[in-house]
Image (cartoon, rainbow, N blue to C red):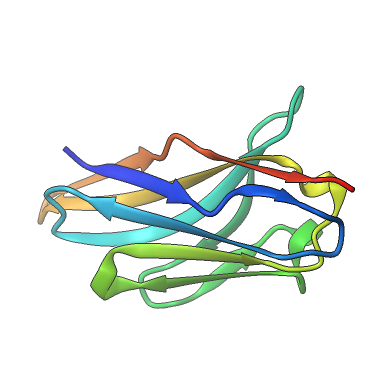
Length: 120
């Protein structure tokens, strides 16, 4: 079984920074695309940022220039550095990963989420 465990959420003032981490554990052959999504109260879950195994990245327009996604393949971990945080960034942030379990099997997994609250 594969688990994704997020950490690093919390309460921060507008303009502040947080760094989220997501570590994948279990029987993993390799990790393909990894990403961060978020869901605010009353809203749909949306993609924040994604990073391919080769390092290519994709960001939501709302976070471009403020958030940076990165990964450490040796540690099976993806990070999200969030700077210049705004109240609109308040949400539960979820880690997502495409995990190659065998040469023929690619399966998608979600973490349980970590709360980020931006408020003065």
